[in-house]
Image 1 (tube, one colour):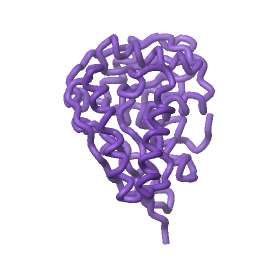
Image 2 (tube, rainbow, N blue to C red; image 1 turned 180 degrees about the vertical axis):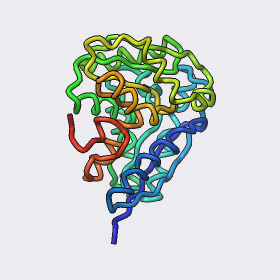
Image 3 (cartoon, rainbow, N blue to C red; image 1 turned 90 degrees about the vertical axis):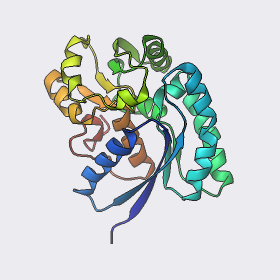
Image 4 (cartoon, one colour; image 1 turned 135 degrees about the horizontal axis):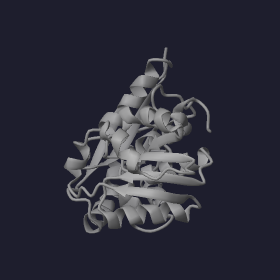
Amino acid sequence: MSKSFRIGQIVPSSNTTMETEIPAMFRAREAIRPERFTFHSSRMRMHKVTKEELEAMNREGLRCAAELADARVDVMSTACLVAIMAMGPGYHRETETQLAEIARANQCFAPVMTSAGALIDGLKMLKARRISLMAPYMRPLTDLVVKYIESEGIEVIDSISFEIPDNLEVGKRDPLQLINDVRTLNTDGADVVVASACVQMPSLPAIERIQDMLGIRTVSSAVCTVRRMLDHLELEPVVPGAGALLAGTAA
């Protein structure tokens, strides 16, 4: 009999991608491994990707952690990278501690993580020193993401901002468009390309195509989130079609 795991996500109310790409990766894994997964979300209000709305949304995260704790999920993660990174370097560690305290107070002892921390961890697993990235944010927010990543000791060679303020519109973007977008990104000397530094901007169908085209390992925030979830669940980090980080080896 296969073991089943409950995946818990704290999701912005306008996010439509984390509840599609994350399950898609786990379903792909189910096709080659015996474990099974169910998915459970709690939502924080957010419409426009501005620093003010992100700050207000972050305050709702503690309520969401308590709600997911009631479901006794096996791993819990936030699903908004920029909301964490916009608050300043290292903030994902503070958030993870706060959310874990709420979960523990509600009798849930699952690992607690953030998509922001997962991206940093994923890049470090790949021993990335220099990266290039694409993001849907307005340029000032992308600059905060770049600053955050660089504070973790990883140089960002180049970044593209698509400047889409409406979070619903971000989720409607064709992921295969990234294959053309990446041609304008400076990747000379890059160890890793981040095809989507946003968990709302769809990218999964483009990950391996960009990786094969450039000959550079390619990830996304969602891919890194799944990798960290599998690590926390002590499961082999293998997902077909999701790039180097989920190919079953760390690097």
